[in-house]
Image (cartoon, one colour):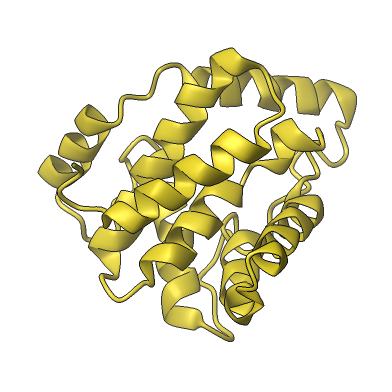
Length: 180
């Protein structure tokens, strides 16, 4: 049992990844742990985030990289999440999940609909991607304990490799998922 994440979040993440993953199987565990780290950070930043929605947004937030596959993955990822929610008759949470996915790579503070949830989710992803250099008020000990619970397993090495590939393939637009 994860002491920070609600069991529903973990179950939702696992259900989505088991049914939707289309990428290299060796990257599934690193991505799953990234999702569990960032959703744990989000929960620590904002305990009011709905557990199911957090699991859905977490599992899908980068999934288009492996499912579509594309590096310009925000739109197809949002579409995958919407289809999954529609199949469960849970479209009522589509607006919050959509905003969390769309703005998780925003470089500046998010202001808009569902601001508290989206901003917590955005910050949580930045905590993980920065390897805890950015913490947004979380203690280094908490970040470290979450990383210990869900080890990196080469996720950041994959990101570095994929980023270098993007700069080679599309040097004028290597980071299409970023927003100001």
